[in-house]
Image 1 (cartoon, rainbow, N blue to C red):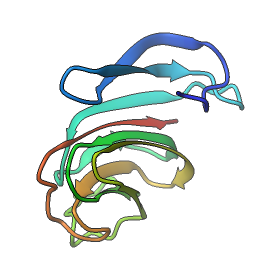
Image 2 (cartoon, helix red, strand yellow):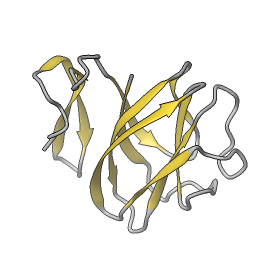
Image 3 (tube, rainbow, N blue to C red):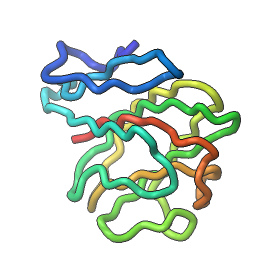
Image 4 (cartoon, one colour):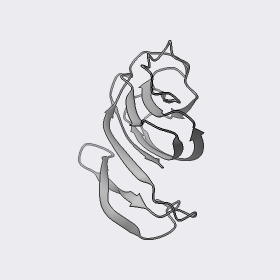
Length: 140
């Protein structure tokens, strides 16, 4: 399932709820191709309230999310340490999550100031999805 991880897991695992009772485990720290250890931030309930991933420059490597909503959810990434207001603050990029599915995306996006993330109903909007979206952000 996690074909992007190239070597054995190091450290603990992060469990991400996929449905009411089923879970899948994601590596909390793993060695990637360049031998740098990635960190993982488990966000149990991502919504339109921004979550700080990292307060300094880095790389967003992967995103694992489960969209339990019956419609698209957009995970917006912000390259800043300043206060973020989804719908007003421009996101650096966004990842669309199809309705009622698990999404795993390789990203490799450089963030030059900091990393924040939020979930909304449109690519540039500020409205929260009907249900929160559990996500794991893998970064370095």
